[in-house]
Amino acid sequence: MEDERSLSLLKLMVNEGLFPSPEEDEKRKIIVEKLKTIVVAWAKKVAWQRCLPKQQIAATSATILTYGSYGLGFHDPESDIDALCVGPFFATIAEDFFIVLHNILKSRPEISEIHCVKDSKVPLMRFTFDGISVDLPYAQLKVLNVPENVDILNLSLLTNIDETSWKSLSGVRANQRILLLVPNLMNFQSMLRCLKLWAKRRGVYGNLNGFLGGVHLAVLAAFVCQNQPNASVIALISNFFSTYAMWPWPTPVMLQDGMSSNVEDVIETRFYMPIRLPCSPYEYCHSNVTKSTFTKIRAEFLRGHSMTRTCFLTIQDLLKLKLDSDVGRIFEPFPYSTNYTRFVKIYLSAPDQDELGDWVGWVKSHFRCLLLKLEAVQGFCDPNPMEYVDMDASEPNVVFYWGLNRSRCNFVYIEPVEEDFSRSIYCGYYGIRGKMELSIVQASELPKNARFDSGNGKKMKACWKMLDYNQRRTPAYSQHLPSYFVGYVESNGDTEYPSTGG
Image (cartoon, rainbow, N blue to C red; front, side, top):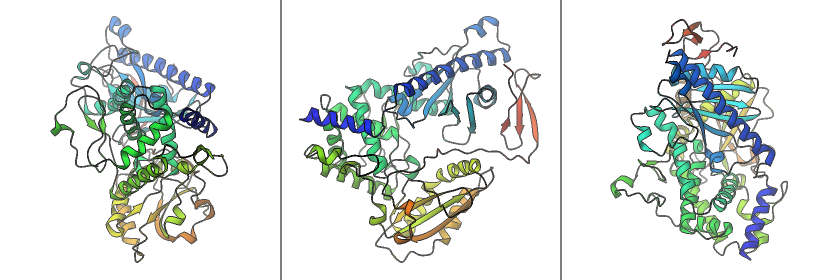
């Protein structure tokens, strides 16, 4: 019976469109292979710019390593590709990655919408390759040749690398360790697909909003798989909820990896939900969880446990799923409009759609700051990650509705919070400033497209440009080959790139 339920669950995932088609998978593989070819040619070009000997230029190489949902094998048709560029010792991030490689990528006809995100925790380039979004950070190793099968779990290769490269490598290293540690990879991937659907439907997915990100779910799921190596997918999901509904947070979740560690090294008290990455030296998953989001995540774990403690009482309860009607109870969208009577409306707008994407990405990267401010005056706030559009507004816009504490109905004056948050987001933003407005709305005032019952919403990556077209451009030349022109640098540090011409 349990095998039948697991099979039905897999059919549910297919019906939900959680699996990419063979054609879509092949397209992603081709993109990764093309990127590998591009970065190898780029590394040799940079070696030539450095005037390295011919034999060293011939030996020079770079590679692409995938991670995230694609690297772990639980991506869906809408997932982007997280791809790390690993380059040789002489290829710098400032000049060679963000100027020379950017220039090469920009000249490719299949690549569009390329942005440099330099000020994030992990600097990267973000672009669209044949219709698929790609995030491309960079890591620089102290070697001449980076082979395609480079072993980044080998700590000797990581000696004396810079902090940015270390941060860029951590996600890939964690992915590779997880894949080595889970006892049944196929069950692990199926479990993750279901958990991601659950987290999105219940409003607890999205690191920027203080909830669970992909790496958090991956480590939490791998821990359950390790403890139940022979369990079916349906049993693993049930054990997932029972494990974390009763977990003694802030005790860290740590995978069994066969490596010794001191107790003093693993206790992390700064986070509500510490989750350790399974690679040495140990690090913790970056987390934006706050008191409010921790409360909601725990409540959803308990709800899942109460619904799955007898291993999904009947298959009809779980699998009554249609794309445009009712869904099974476990995946039922969170009923915001009935759970909360008041909401903070966050209205973001910009003059055009391109600028809106940049502006929304910038503001979302500061959402934790706003959430903490609202918690200070309201005690609790549920930051619904879903993005909506105000159809009555003439300008391109994105709207968020965050649920407020039902027990504090006297919170009316949002202006001080808006003024404080405005100072936070306008400081350091060099693009064309958009509009940000906060207001309090009643549940009865919500527009029909924001009643939170469909589970659908527009996905927008956190992405922004740092461009000011009114500033002067300065030609940039290679530091190692002064007569070699590489592009134009704006006075704020961004670069405009000419065509490489091959």
